[in-house]
Image (cartoon, rainbow, N blue to C red; front, side):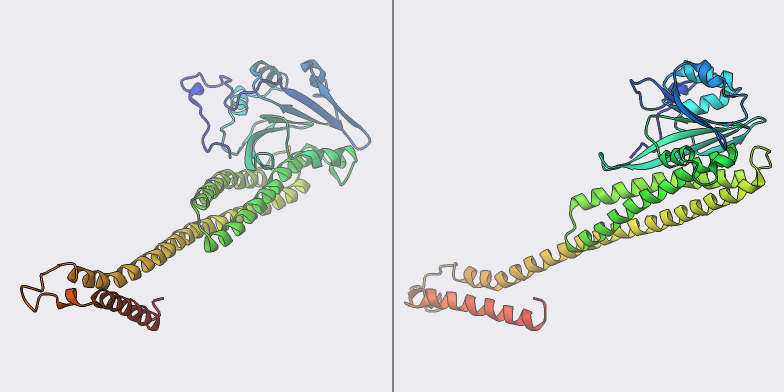
Length: 360
């Protein structure tokens, strides 16, 4: 799981608008792809020269520019200058510790999202910041690295599935946001499976590894809650925002995303209560196991108390020749067997008594 708070000490004391990349350092160069489309037009390619995608700015088609990698500050700066993106917005783009939010400028809408998906190779949840610029005829997305949840969106554009090729940039922004939110459900299913398996394990055989897993689940849920709650405000802000960049016919789709966000929040709150219950189950199971162990030890100790008493008496060795009251059994041929017999009778009698009392 990604860190709850990313280190931002590099940005301390900097002039507002200074671009400082805050995130995981990567050796590979940023990868930029462009998808330009219309009702009858489609073009997809990777670009290396900034002038190549600047030519798409004044076209009547819909252009989606996707930037994978934020470590090249000069590239981000140049791209922002070409598309008139404010310096403070660029600062938020390269600072990947941002809270999900929406900012409405005169010519574009700036949206920050948290893309979360499950990495099967690491068996862990991976989080990545996605920044989105929605303008009149283009959408720019900025990601920390290659690999995302937008393959379905790209496939719909390539094959002209649905209404995406007939709608504007606002609908493209909706599909990107919807893909991010829908993938939350995949992560929720994974967490749900872990919780179900954990419940059975805690009841049958609680182990210290179970406790580590519970704390890991709590950490994941806290992170998801921290991510999704602000997203609800973002979607709500888009619905209420009166901007010409978002058409009225597209608002109903954003309302659907809002409903999905509320559903994710309800699921997270349910998981939060369930994981707290798992911790209670773990503590109860450990306590019950300890009680069983203490019960057995107590019964054993209780049985040996009278036996130890008998052995202590016959271990005093008072000389019977001095007085007839001094342990006459020492001179008796069956004295040893008699003492063992008394001990055996006491032990068996106590076991029978415990069984009748249902203590065993």
